[in-house]
Amino acid sequence: MGAVSIPLPAHSRFRDLPGAWSAPRWYVRLFPAVLLCIAVLLNLVTPVHLTFIGLFVAAPLIAAAIDTPRITLATAVATIAITTPFLTVVNEPPNLSVTERWVLVSTVVVVSGLALAVNAVVTAAQRRMASALGIAEIVQRAVVPPPPSRTGPLRIAARYRSAQRGTLVGGDLYATQETSFGTRLIVGDVSGKGLGAAATVAVVLGAFREWSTHEPDLARLAWRLEEALLRENRRMHLLDPEEGFVTAVLAEIPHSAPDRLHAVCCGHPPPLLLPPGRPPRYLPVPESAPPLGLGREPEVLKGDVQRTDFLPGTFLLLYTDGVTEARNALGEFYDPATALEGRAFHDPDDLADALTADIIAHTGGALRDDAAILAVHHTPNPP
Image 1 (cartoon, one colour):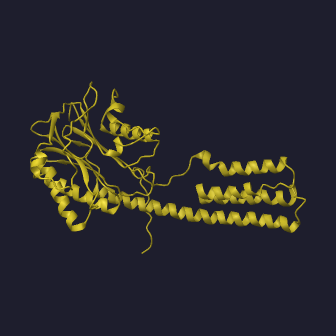
Image 2 (cartoon, helix red, strand yellow; image 1 turned 180 degrees about the horizontal axis):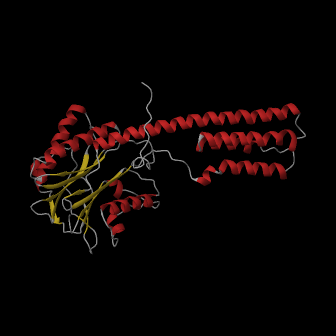
């Protein structure tokens, strides 16, 4: 079967990831033309025995690496058209014979041809990457589909930002589930990446969706995830025997008390609440709350459930450690509570976009880990 090219849709979340190729900025694309102009100027103002042929042949090679086949071809033709008269008529080097001059011209032609070949290889690699990213888009959306934008009085938005070039499927996860007990949410992070991490994500989210509708107690729900993860790990060896685990935070807004929030953290960064007119605050998390996959008993989890007010107008932010472990050039960690204090947000999309832009600016785009964000807004006047 031949290769299938899958174009990235305009709304694709992989389009702006570090692994995805995009055209360089306009001033970078001008560099080959600038080189040719510099080479021509130097040939006109310097002694005739100086040809600067290196600058001429560099132009198509650079175009091959950064631009399209059409621009590379135009650069190669321009280079040949300019160097041929300079080496044979306009600026004849007196120390070279006619044959030697045409050898130099032939060298320019050969290097220009090599530039076209290099550009063909680069273009083919970019197309394969686009196809792989398209497949990864399908896999990621199948395993971690976008949550509904609204459920009851809650409005929800999710964002995912990949850290490393070539990392197509990560281990971050999020999901929401409407149940007879209330709206339940999960954000988690699997140690490791690749297909093993994707399989672990599928196990955790599958157990979450199944048991969320059956298990009335949030601590018991966390234990059900633990149980499913341990069972499937014994069968498929999903996790690293020494360092394999899944951090997660589970949250619930009960139907019986819609102005309350219940949450349990399993080795995960704490939820952040942004009440209207008040500074952001983290929900306290017990220190004795290790990640999933370590074999805890359900009785231990009962003391880990935290409860607090979740009044209308409040934002809830669940996120992975890719957010809090984002560092700037000075090595300073990003603190969402500090960064978001005093800022107003219209809806959860506004909050999620602001947080994503913040961590990109804080790190200069060099994230150390994937970042997943789930923003929830308890709307004061639900429809």
